[in-house]
Image (cartoon, rainbow, N blue to C red; front, side, top):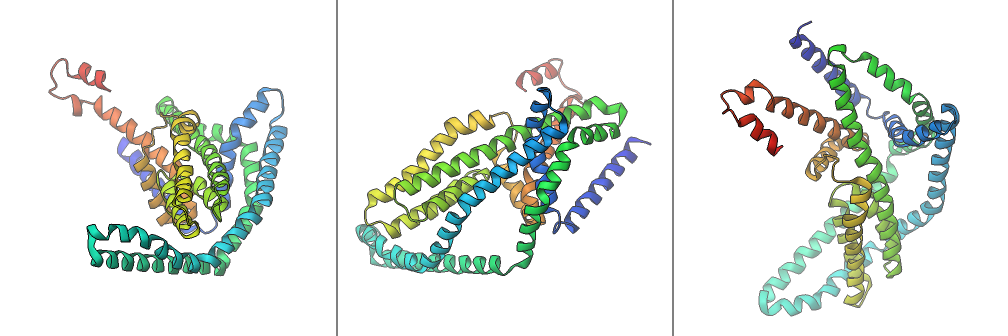
Length: 364
């Protein structure tokens, strides 16, 4: 088989894989989630094996501990989060009416600079934006309540994911060895090195980012609750959980939190305390959590992660969101490998001056 035929075979295989993933996206959620959990827990199982435990015992203990802890957190946090979410939707009309009244004095101070017409236009735009936001939230809430498919996915996620996670975690090393046996022998070490690079990238980003999101969610939730913001826990915890989307999670939480603070508090000092919680969270994340838990060598640029999340989410829904970062890591590693091979190829070095290759390596 020629190199061209091999390339065609790989492209066809990849096309079939993507097509099947798209067609089966409605039932893939528990399996993708189970694979993610198994990948996340595999180092803990390996550690127990090194201590003398069997793989079966390590898998059973780690899987049971993980899902019992997740169930405990769900039992403790779900009633609070659900209750606050219901109250928040009930009070949205009250908040939307209060916010324009609260910002009216601030606009009065700006009147000498922007004029009466400017103040009127700002208020009109703000009221229209708030109205559109309320309508969107109402449609979203109605859609979530009315979608039986979403409920079925949730049930399947809760029931099937632990089973899938257990079996994948138990057989993880065997699966890796089986895939390794399928690799072309002529390029075995090169492909293994790329897989190791992908694993390092995912281990640094996914495992570290999950920990960062949980810590940030707890920090924001407790901080906003301590400063007296209504629904502060659910807003803060949700902000932390979506912080895996660079910048978007914090900005969304900040906008919602500040808006509720303006509607709720009569003092701008309290609004400033809400903003201070988000600022402290950013300092904590940027200077301590991310450098320690994620690191700077994961090779995933923030813009690339955002694009991958949006693109995969649009194509495959929530399954695509789960697959976005692994796919981004794979593509990133392969692109860097391809660029590295190109920079060492005659296509790049043709007619280069004698010191060209050495100079290029010095800059890499």
